[in-house]
Image 1: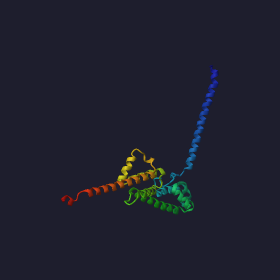
Image 2: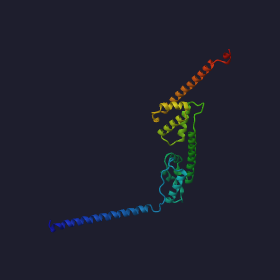
Image 3: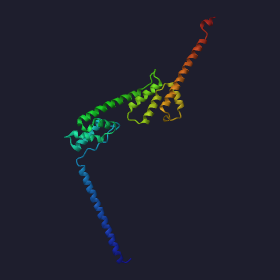
Image 4: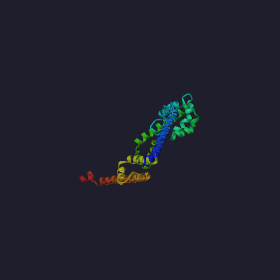
Length: 243
């Protein structure tokens, strides 16, 4: 290729270089403008938006309200706190959100809304704690049938763990029922379940099996007692020996 032919090629290469540099400069300017816009939008906002609250959030409702109030003060100021009440709905989930809707929380004064929700769910939290204590300490009463005991275990388990799913509740209920069976019954249940996953058994099936083993154990006790009576009756008395 002659030097004359190199001229257009150089011109084209220079044009491409200039265009690339121009595009890069334009992109840099756009990014800078966007950063400035975002900075203006967030100017003065120091408190991050709170995570939506539900009873399984890992924080208490009063702790959540401390964050929420700081967020609202930072964003809206605290001259008109009652304007925070409608904002709260966005940050609630589950039972607390349902309570907010039932109270028509957006129309309530902020302090009244906050105090009402705290009181309502403080009672619920304490109630749940009490049921958890009962569930951990539960045992079959001596005169209680296994069927009645199984129903009581189910009820207390559900009250102690109101936010658990169906499968979790089923596993906990079955485990607790088996754990608290009389020793003789539990021993026989363990033998038949040794190679079977607990999840494979319906709760009602476990209760029925336990009832059958309980009846069997009762019959065995009666037979053993009767046998002992017969043996004792067949033993010679002291008068027979003397004779």
